Amino acid sequence: MKTVALVGVQWGDEGKGKIADLLAAQADVVARFQGGNNAAHTVVRDGQKFVLRLVPAGALHPGTVCVIGNGTVVDPFALLGELEALDRRGYPLDRGLLRLSAEAHMVLPYHQEIDRAREARLGRRAIGTTGFGIGPAYEDKMARCGVRFGELVNFAALRRKLERNIEEKNRYLKAVLKAPKTAGDQLIARLRAARPKLLPYLCETGAFMEEARAQGKRILLEGAHGTMLDLDHGTYPFVTSSNCVAGAAFAGGGLAPGSLEAVLGVSKAYATRVGAGPFPTEIKGGLARLLRREGEEFGSATGRPRRVGWFDAPLARYAARLNGLWALALTKLDVLTGINPLRICVAYELKGARLSGLPSPGIALEKVRPLYEELPGWSEKIGEARRLEVLPANARRYVERIAELSGVSLAFVSVGPQPEQTIVLQSPFDS
Ligand code: IMP
Image (cartoon, rainbow, N blue to C red):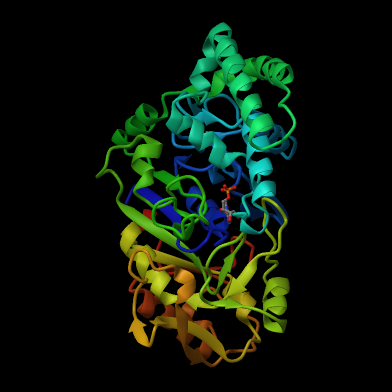
């Protein structure tokens, strides 16, 4: 298979960075197709930790072309900062190795100011956004007043548009959000200074990827966040402002439907979520603290402590259906070492009735009660395992039960943060 998408099965932070990096080693092109720097993909290379927010995981593989597709929203200053940091650490992305869609929208300071001011006003009803302006940037895209990277070509016209936008945003910030004005002149000056650095990356990325595909190149479409944060299919309104399911790879990547040959879902061996919203299998108390500490469950984008919970099979089945999962990459199995017994949510209960899937539309997910199956844990360290057969019997039973309950076979089982700490059962690019 040559064109493969990778998506999160849960609420983001599934460990997509590590799996994307493994697959990127086999890919010619790696493309992001949605989201912005609210994503944070952690990759460990030679003991060094890299957190990639906008740049795809291909960045750490010299020669692999990284594409930032039209469906993304990109903070131009954050992008340049990320590129400079990668350069300093020995991973330069020269012209030709980074292709930024001329149709991708910019996240500008006024989007971030609106995002933060709104969250502050919502108080206890806040969504718990990353505060990076993602929602307001997508709103402008839909309202057709967003700024696309291609507009940098004619800066005089862009300046006039920015002035109009800034005036409107300032009225909204002042009158509705009671927040300070945005620094409009400063934004225009910063963008003018950034322009020569950004222009060389501009590209018609859909056409570029179609050409690569026609030449038989391997393309990895790297999804961000997770299915349960999808704007339509997730736990609305506690979601991000883009579609995160595999279907978004077409509209947001610019490839035609039908070109995708496999979708790999990434899931933790347990569950986590940052921000507010329903989380049926959430664990509180001492066990939650232990899991958070062992799994280093603090948001890579914001540093916030993540909420933790048991593996939720009804949600995995839902994600498998929505994304048409070919297989599952299960991450952080090692974190569960020493926890006994383990639990897997196999179904939900709602008003005395057993549900094997999500409740019907209109019924909030927080109303359901998870029904668990208990499995014995294991105490042996598993970081050295490279084959399923060498895992402790209970660890093997646990992962096989997850695959069985999710209705999807396993492709990878991750037993530690290093790339080599992975049990590879099947790689989509080798299938
Ligand atoms: P936003 O994407 O910043 O608007 O935040 C909306 C919701 O999505 C919040 O609950 C965030 O914590 C969550 N979120 C956004 N991106 C990620 C991610 O990459 N991992 C985990 N949660 C995320």
